[in-house]
Length: 538
Image (cartoon, rainbow, N blue to C red; front, side):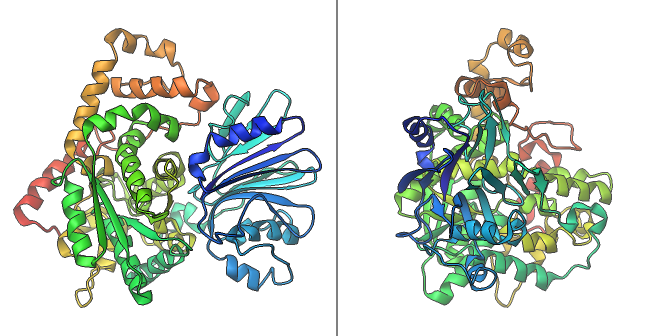
């Protein structure tokens, strides 16, 4: 939706702050504004207009002295206006404005009331509160400068060279000077022993449908990212059904190296089946390599998986905004919730399987969500993720863990999700897509992408550089030439140690090959052979 920057403390030059904020103008190409409070604190906002296009400008003032900036969407804003905030006078129809009024009404104790994806800062005199959504769908960083001023920003770019230290703001928390960090999101499912609810297919299907319906809230055109995998295909199918009720057309978008890429073929089948207006985008390996420097600047990470997968998403996002679409639904989160990655097949026990799903959901903000946000917002496109809806998580994460394990269903990953939408009378998807094996996005665009990328990076890094890698990068030392190449680019843009420390790299558990590609798992090769024989695996 936008980019926010807040500086708590006096003395920063307004023109400098405007320039700092403009470093993330890609997040909000529609509007830009700044407010300096009576106490000298500064709030800045780069706006992508999605709700209340005409009067939703930020920073927003509450009823009295409080001001706020917000990035994200509050899906229950109308319900809040009609109930707990019905005595308040609003200045706009923006979903964001409810945040400052909730602060005025309830003080710090209101974040659990918000249903949405958000990062915000509210300033009232010398008091302030900053908060981030439960899973970290929206990014937020914080830092301190030499004079003790506190910074908050949607990306590192505006603050990395201003702060002596910076870090990622933890999801599911708020921060105030009186309380420090407070964890407000404490779901039942964080206890692995709570994964004991009987499987209810109808409830699973209905709760995901509700999550998609919320995320169709928009005053601008909405599309879907359709990779052809199960997760994006399901969200596309649900969205198509819901929009059909209103007579609106749904645009779907896919990307691949060529028309024969695994994801492109499957996406075409789904689009034809759903009747969407489909757009198939292609990119070349040479184009992907050419934009790596700019991409890593946007992503603010050197994680191998994130860079690999973000390259096609970057090109796809550019093509989508050129079509005039500002919002897309995406399928992030399903693999973490349901143990969909192929390495989950190797979990040594049901308890370990469930613990890993919890940990993967909790760490989504370091990888898939970071990629989904920054590779889309690089072009002013907002990605919404229905699978990470709070209510859906409460349902899906507490299902009996054994029901989610692939071994329970002869190795079929995400079986219960597939089965919940296996409705032959009114099918959501073609059977060969509903039961298609997982392809990680970076693989599914075309296998040559990863293979050539690894070769290219290896050609750019010498053996001598690798031998001295621990001296140049003592923290999180890169273990491969590909990782070194990305780290080198990242270091050029973000040389601060605290910037490097914001990055977490993902290594799959329970398998010998530590490459994050799904093809590194032996199950991928075996299943490829099986699918080639039968076309459908049930």
